[in-house]
Image (cartoon, rainbow, N blue to C red; front, side, top):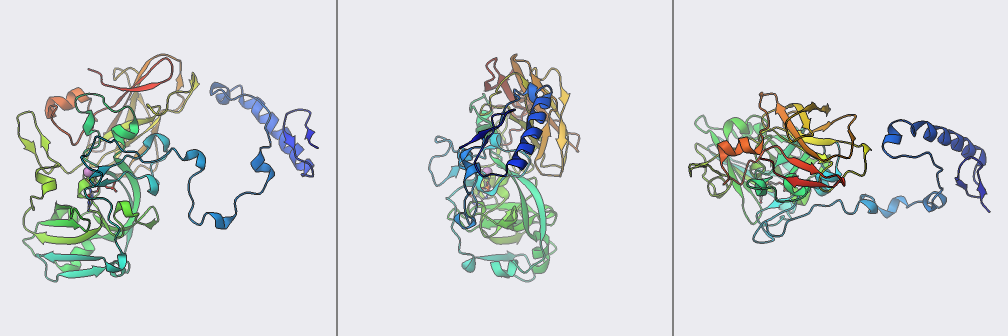
Length: 431
Ligand SMILES: Nc1nc2c(c(=O)[nH]1)N[C@H]1C(S)=C(S)[C@@H](COP(=O)(O)O)O[C@H]1N2
Ligand SMILES: [Mo]
């Protein structure tokens, strides 16, 4: 037998603590009625009763059933996705972070985008070593165990593939923020400062570059100037508190804050010290920028200031008129985001968004446009970020004036989302 309350339709199961429940009921009925007039009303929330669903009537899942937790089954659509035609083979592959489904600035480990030149190497940490050789006083070989005994730092940094947005140079092409901007993730890395390891090896006075090499089948390698190596690079062992994921370079990856993702070598196995750049494939044939005069820019390491609105976006249509959350992410490889503006009319007028702290250098920064209510009209949404070097994120027409249309890498142009009267959102190009 079930009892029905007089002032709401909460179903109270038999033999439950009726006194406590009637108290809760009275409180709830009061607050929904109050809220319905204000913000909650604008969002469509109505004063209503509350059911006692099946999960409130039976015991929940046992602690031993899920020794390593997973998201709710109702969130099972929030996954990394790839675009079939993007790479020639599956071994050389990219997938994308589902930015539309995330908030805050941290990317959960299981949905950090991946970029592999030879698949994700499954490395046995007991057999993995990191060598430091070349122009050093003492060539060194570290086991992973050795590295785990050295002093550590923990820092949040974004990693963006230089090819993020590379498909969008000429036209708006991919209809989703996961695909237009999803080659970025932001993680708290814990590991040994690279400077410490290089000092231990003793860098010879004439050495001004290092070469970092991965232990995957691609043996991917890049040159990094010594000034950067001795600045803020980390030989990372942990991400977001746990050991690195296989996809992100377990057991050792290099963190090169603010620089293009390609230099963040995964499954790091060797650091050679030298007196010139190595001219590796990834810095000559790839990761160079073809300019309008036919010449290619090289060694464009820093990721310029950029932002994007993650809600609304093509994956997140606006559910209705009135209150809605307008939010996005901004970042700069050159420093700290100082301001983000939002435009409703394709860049004519701008409103200043609120940066939700902590705001940290070379880290994703969350922004919100507080108090936004959609009136049901067509909108051309844009966001524009600025950093502490004074740099302002450009419109695509401005970027193309300098860079032309033959680039792939380093597209940091302002993104336009066209909000239709239906609330649907499309990726468009203005001008
Ligand atoms: N060893 C190795 N390191 C690598 C790569 C690789 O294929 N092999 N890909 C690079 C590229 S191009 C990028 S963008 C980043 C991607 O890092 P992620 O897989 O953690 O997103 O790793 C870089 N480090
Ligand atoms: Mo990349």
